[in-house]
Image (cartoon, rainbow, N blue to C red; front, side):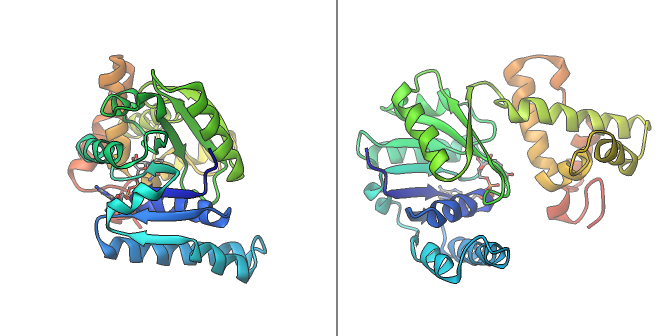
Length: 282
Ligand SMILES: NC(=O)c1ccc[n+]([C@@H]2O[C@H](COP(=O)([O-])OP(=O)(O)OC[C@H]3O[C@@H](n4cnc5c(N)ncnc54)[C@H](O)[C@@H]3O)[C@@H](O)[C@H]2O)c1
């Protein structure tokens, strides 16, 4: 099928980035959120991020105007029925995604693929909510979306080869590099990354080293662009904890036990950069 019009559900950090790249690559985008104020904020962010690309000479002023012109903000979900492909990037709560998947399954034409950008929820479980499990897939972008090259393309148990091929090719058209993985808690990215961050937290908790020292080891010794604790603060400590819990319960292995210091910090409201305090003060 010729994919022209893209629906993006959720206009937060990831949704605005996803709308940005589709718009910049020539697709018409319908960007949906629950309130107009979230859409206004998303469009302001997209405009600012397009300015960055303009300043770097990656796009022209005309490209920016055209990209913004292709993104249509909506609060009326019914408009998604016109779309040829829909990606959900709403809040990471299973109840919220359940409601969205059930409703979209009713609204969208039967041949339409519905993807999720979820970081940790089972694609197989989302697919089971619908009458089109073969057309449900994970399309996991990374933050910041306009910059990061990777898209993890996640097959649920029932995802068809045709769905997989369409989404893999679509990622390529966005100048991203798709990597195929199967559905399992944390997929590959978080399955490997989060235990590293969690272990760095144990090292701090046990007094092995201060956060600055742990981060320096990774920046200078392993050439990581930022250390694990800086990265955890950037992702959000509440998000890290949620993902560790999904892996701990989903994989049943004690090695995924969330670090008690992480739990304590989240209880204190120290969520990293977004709350002004995490392993560092901002
Ligand atoms: N932030 C990251 O680094 C990151 C990376 C990869 C994947 N993800 C995943 O992307 C998804 C979105 O994460 P985010 O960081 O952008 O969250 P966010 O909180 O920044 O944005 C979520 C948006 O969804 C909207 N929303 C909630 N319910 C909705 C509904 N019923 N219909 C339409 N919109 C609704 C909210 O109003 C909000 O604007 C999550 O599944 C998350 O796991 C996040």
